[in-house]
Image (cartoon, rainbow, N blue to C red; front, top):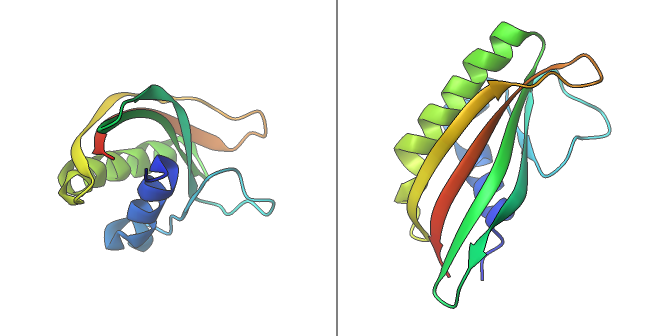
Length: 119
């Protein structure tokens, strides 16, 4: 079975539009925080013999709230337009997006993303 976090992080890091916005995706907050970045964390989902239904928290971090919001829209658009084109991905949906400021003061928006993956 494919590690769904690795799959999603790899997709985001290979996307030219996301790269053009100065974003890189990580499985956790890097020790040296960039001004802009994405974190991906699997938060749940059911797995069967044939399919995986992951739920991820995808967080977009930026220098201010407006930038984080704009970048979250870019990530949402790229997920909806291209992630399901991967051979392992049958479907993807972003169920919610919201402002979620970090304790550090860095601006952050979070999306809850679900998918259907073939295992």
